[in-house]
Length: 319
Image 1 (cartoon, rainbow, N blue to C red):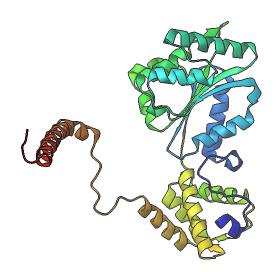
Image 2 (cartoon, rainbow, N blue to C red):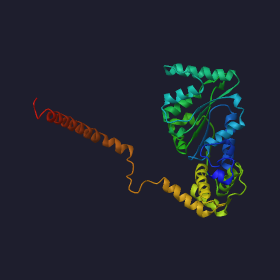
Image 3 (cartoon, one colour):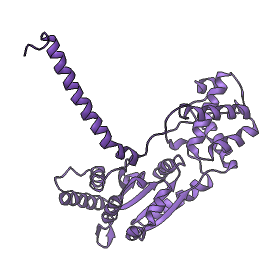
Image 4 (cartoon, rainbow, N blue to C red):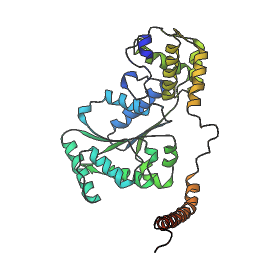
């Protein structure tokens, strides 16, 4: 709606990553340099971490634009909350390997696919997103995949994307061998207040913005305050602010509009006034025996009621 009102060619603040809107902030430029540097070595692991919505996926989309995609064979695993064997199956499927009955056969298929890719002059790259959700066994599986070599050269390189807690996982003694194979690593931080303004204007200009609506200076400061400089949060807030402006048929975005919209967004996600907090998993587990006992009691009572109903329907005890 607001795109039509303001004459934009597209929605400038979509939440899904779109390479057209890539903004080369200082953080994103340095992260991209680390990715390019790591990939140049053609082995080991390249790691990028950052908060949810910091722009890790957008960074990857930008990287693809800079690479000669025809020279790469890429397998991408976007759902990383899987056990080790399933991670291996997903990676194998990404490289075009047919399902196999046992792990040994699946590994042979992966090696053959990697060798075929190398023989065709293509570099094999495995990209795993949300890597912080993997358990230690799955991470060890990734390390084992990186062991495949031919002629003294690695057959596979991996790019790992994850949230900040992955760095804590990586520091564990059990992952020392994986840590030694990390060629480049970067933590993607938030945008500064100045970069936040440039980011908003960059995305607006990408869809034909010519200062309509005009943004008050103080509005940009509040956008940074309420989003912490995280791109996805900026997109969410600014999209709603523009919708607010279109509803009000306003040609200016004020600080008051940003403040009101930020309050509405916070309220949208707030729990109902008298909502009970969700029980922790261990609390649920502790209650399971009592729940099961209650279910058995209810089932027994249902059987009694059914028997009584049958007796009454039969005339009060004829059998």
